[in-house]
Image 1 (cartoon, rainbow, N blue to C red):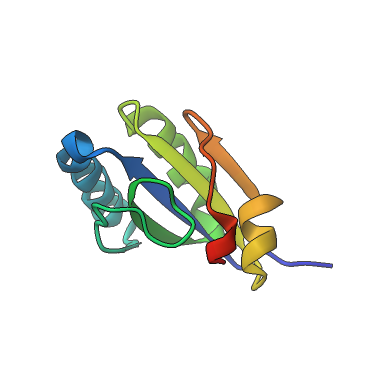
Image 2: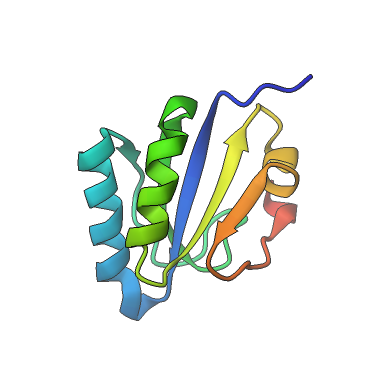
Length: 108
């Protein structure tokens, strides 16, 4: 049996949305005391566009996800569980706020 220890939320954006994405990430970081990753203007790892990662504990899920849903301002957010199996985390334990995008799973 797998156990989800926490989550990552990846905020996706195009270059013209970078200010909005950065603002959303920093607001989430302050409000929920989260670790906010770097703002990547270019695609990195499996992510198809620019992104910023929010890392959070499982106990914040019920508060953070509704907040992101309301405050994402049409930005796409990919959320996945953290079980220790990166491939499964990005295929089986993933959901999207906004449009689903194609991940580059070869990078995992």
